[in-house]
Image 1 (cartoon, one colour):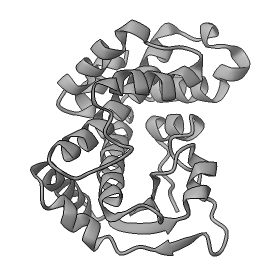
Image 2 (cartoon, helix red, strand yellow; image 1 turned 180 degrees about the vertical axis):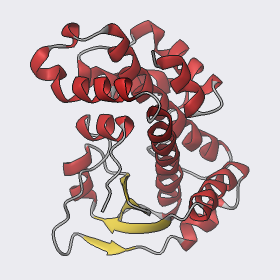
Image 3 (tube, rainbow, N blue to C red; image 1 turned 180 degrees about the horizontal axis):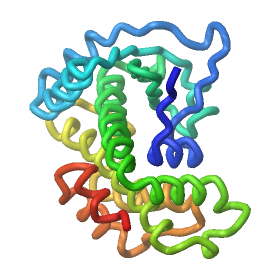
Image 4 (cartoon, rainbow, N blue to C red; image 1 turned 30 degrees about the vertical axis):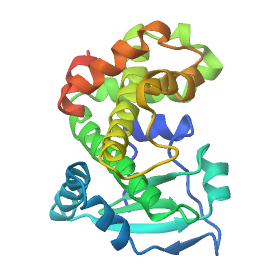
Length: 234
């Protein structure tokens, strides 16, 4: 069974943004996502997420929702929202069972952006194996070897990819919130660039600092993750 481990997935796992779910019995339960999807259908932004779901299903992927305890997600993931796993042609979206349905809708929308970005990166990096290998080596070894020991192009690629995928995912949440799907945790407003910088990028011992806002604008100014990747690879 093939487990997708793209550069993005590896980055997210090792920085605590995607849970490494090795679930003990009783930790998860099947979740009916019908009502959460129905909430997405009430907004134009939500329809984008539903379109993403349809595209994935048309590509042969089965989408499974699993309910996971908030404490378990917090332990494995560093926050209490959710996560995803791509295993063969099955995509599992993990959702905190304690979240109300509106927040569950936000989890689905957020993770779908990550999933689509992940698959795009996998496809794109098949043409750039040297970038994929360098990014993996950096993420696995930067703590032991120090960031300064790596080629600046590798560092820029990893941090740029991470920043942009989070900006794209949280931007989807912000758009949902602006259209009336309430959330207490996913809509960051003008603080989003600083939130990404402090929550994700700082784990590497670096930050974009005063450039975080311009970085977020650059990420969101690109139409797709593939377009972003074309400008980050070498």
